[in-house]
Structures are given as C-alpha cells and as structure tokens.
Image 1: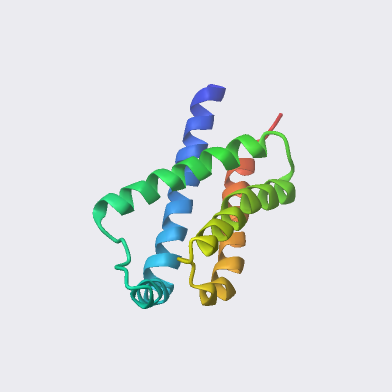
Image 2: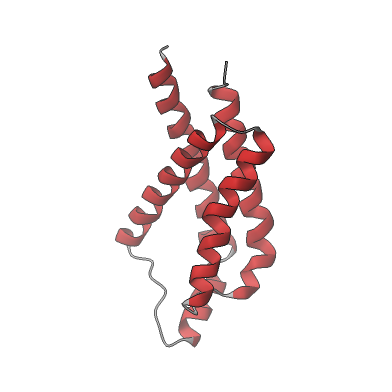
Length: 130
C-alpha cells in the first residue's frame, strides 16, 4: 500500500473514531445539558440532520489535523496539541457566545482528551513515521 492510500485510510478510521466518540458524548451522555441550556437562553438546540452533517465534517477535519500533527510529534504531544487547538479553543468560543453549558466540562474534558489520545494512537499505529 502506498503512503497516500495509507494516509487516507488512517484519516478515515480516525474520523470514524472521532465521530463515534462525539456522538456518544454529545448525543447520549450530554444531550440534556445542551437542550436545557439552550432552553434557558430561549433558544432551541440545533439538532437537525444538517447540523449533524456539519459535525461529521468537523470530525473528519479534526481527524485530518490529528494525522498531520502526528507526522511531526510523538503521541502525547500530538494528543495535547490537537486537543488544545480543537476543544479548548472551541469551548472558549462557545463560552464567549454564552452557548456553552459549563456543567458539561466535568465530563467533556476527560472524554475529549481520551478522544484525542485514541485518535492520535490510531494515526501513530496505522501510519507510523519511518
């Protein structure tokens, strides 16, 4: 298998992991936090299929970023850089827009770190730097 095909497969598998992790965390574990918070703001939590498709695209973009970061850094650095650049910055933006239910962070921080770690591990395991 050539390097390009291996990279594409790696990104696809990492993207599947990221999207499964995001779905579990946000749709199964934390959905009520999101819905209740949006209701407290007088808004409806956006959960139409179009929103879901944007999040799927986000997941594959995150997987792509993890893959490229993993080409230059070790597992822990890849995990922390990708986690900080995606999750921490997203939480700051959503908090600034007043749409982040702060209570989710007790669950979201460790689970998102695990998501980034496993994503980085997939990239390192399937497409190791030689």
